[in-house]
Amino acid sequence: MIDRELLAQAVAEVRAIPGPRERLDEANRLDSALASARADVAKIRRDTVNSIRNPATGYGKIAQMLGLSKARVQQIAREPGQPVLAAYAIRDENGQWHGEPDLLPPGRYREAPSFIAFTPADENLPLAGQVLTVRYGEVAEEGKVSYYTVQIRRDDSGPLNLRMSYPVQDALFGPPYLGSSERQRWEAARDQRRRRREPARSDPAGQ
Image (tube, rainbow, N blue to C red; front, side, top):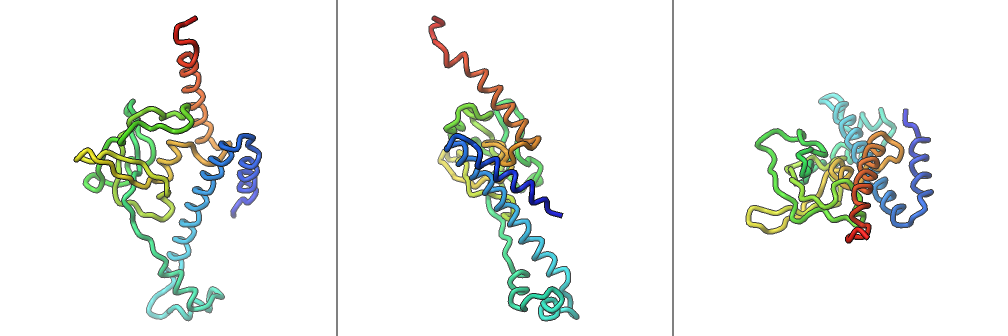
């Protein structure tokens, strides 16, 4: 059963963020997570209708069973699920993978460096300043791929923009659910980087 209170709490926590920039960033991440959930729900609907259909049970009969129109059942059954070329994992300069590095088997993915170092507005993000190794391939778009992009360096040294999966987006900008264990770990890494950078922001002459 869906816990609507958790969703309402996430929305309330985003609304309560004092800084407008941080509030907008969290709202965008929550929106991406909701878009992912909507795509997953669409797949559940489609798979459910198609699992019922057989030579003896057509769309008309399924429509009667579900209390829907035949046209609506046909629409659900034919909702597209197109793959997209996307970045689904990144490796940082310490050799640690983020995202879903095992999503595709060998032979179905490629790797390339990011075109430039990751330079977010918030320089305290855990992966900021790093040239990342990007693993990419054909990923099922449903619930997997964001409209945020990462730019890689192709073999000819030219740039190529790739959409990134939600797990990669979360690794770069933080998981969307405030208070979750994943978010807490990410925030701890951000705080650690901030503390490491504080001496560098002090008087460079040591005066």
